[in-house]
Length: 205
Image (cartoon, rainbow, N blue to C red):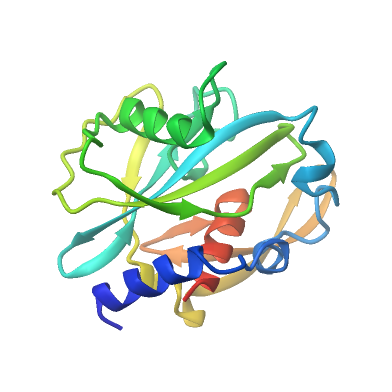
């Protein structure tokens, strides 16, 4: 599928009824860390905005991900979408754009917001994550913040959408074994909340 066709499908999908929780659950670890949806805890959870930033590189449409450092407060060492906690009086879309700009030193004035995905509740950290999807034509000039970003990861959308790149493994945490699905990319394992958000995004295709 050509990058322009992928982008067109994504834009069209964002204006239709969203795939929602059923799509997110395709990448949830089993047993699940909790069974509440975001709308059940929206009044009490901490709110964060994250950005699915799409851009062309080496002829393929890509998603910008980061591997977090071991010094951040939450989800140390994990692969995540850029974003962070909402500031008072700020929209969650503005949060996603601001945090991405701060984390990666990006100039996002040329970004085009395409739409939003279904929020996701993360029980261990009590965050409700609100994903914004955007596209940028300009080449990315990245200046990652070394205290937050250990590595920038740029998987192509068509790679993530290929079922051959979805794997599962058993991990022991929280005192028990879990079957963890993940997207495999260049030795990285993209799992957890990031994989669940990406699962709904990829369902738009």
